[in-house]
Length: 170
Image 1 (cartoon, rainbow, N blue to C red):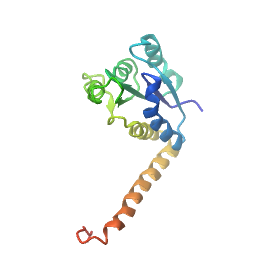
Image 2 (image 1 turned 30 degrees about the horizontal axis):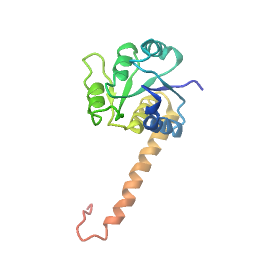
Image 3 (image 1 turned 180 degrees about the vertical axis):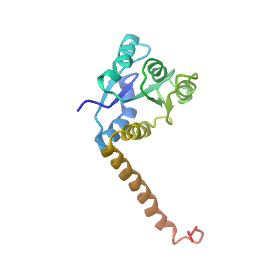
Image 4 (image 1 turned 90 degrees about the horizontal axis):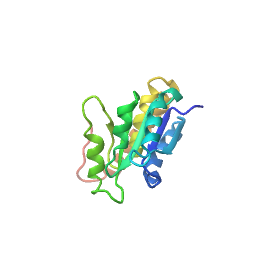
């Protein structure tokens, strides 16, 4: 199948974080592509990627970047597709805040959905939810995933039942 989600990152070192998005999309059986596209070191490649993604069938782009983190915003300025930014705490980062603010503080008209620092899995989940709008099988898998999350939490509630102070639903 043709990829529906594009996962891009500023450098190979970002893969350790961005792999979480790929793993979730794989779990949801959503085809994706993954590559390096640097806003600063390969600007022409970035432009080409952003301009051609929709024509190739990509429906959502997840863009991870550290430091100045211009990749998500620059891609969003070019493509009509939704872009999910993943701020990455990199070796040259100011504790990750530079990446967070670079992705979060987009000007009106160029939105980028921004997840938490290093939260590529959340980007994968959000991308899957967007894909699910037009893919019933993905919708059902997302529903199952959410039920599993609920069940995991409810199982931990049992651990609190024997404590002296706990809340009981009436």
